[in-house]
Image (cartoon, rainbow, N blue to C red; front, side, top):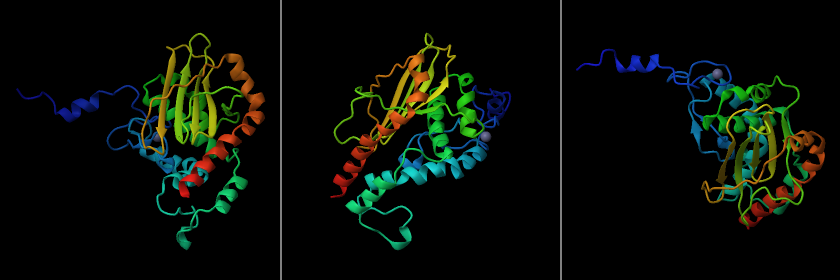
Length: 272
Ligand SMILES: [Zn+2]
């Protein structure tokens, strides 16, 4: 028996839930959809999703905020993963230069955890990408979306490095990116915790009025072993703790330097 209408048309008539670009709302179909990396390619992200952004928004973010992230973090990925004497990002015209202690020292001296607003917006986009690929409700994403677009002046974004507490257990030479989502109906808090290279550790608060099912999910990508190991994150921040993050940001930022120096040490050890 012949199918009453061409199959192609049949599919177009059904609009799958959540298949609009989360930034501009255009319907995502074969023409408009794009492959959005959950974690940017520039820092070793592998997983892609087609149901997040349209081509146009993907390109706009790629040229702007993702570029800012790449210019700050790509060097660490290159230095970690290259087998050849590393290329110094930005100095490729001059050919290869061998990474030596002085170069590492320069990175150490010039590094700062603060950065351009676009850099943090790009990290927020990683968190939102992860949340949406898990299929969670879009109704709690307005604040973070407006932050990613650049129209929210007070970012829901805080450094996170607790004292005398381990968020997860880090293997001796592990360097990974970690994404974690926590949603609690009883506290009303929904937030993402992210570690890039285990040293750029941030919390993004999606909402303090969360009413959905409890969420506790984690993704880890180990850049050295090129694997995605399971990871247990011990975080269950209360409302009060989340509210205090804005005040403790400066102290938290200082605490990110030891993990940053650990990363540089691993890079140095791998080059020698
Ligand atoms: Zn769009």
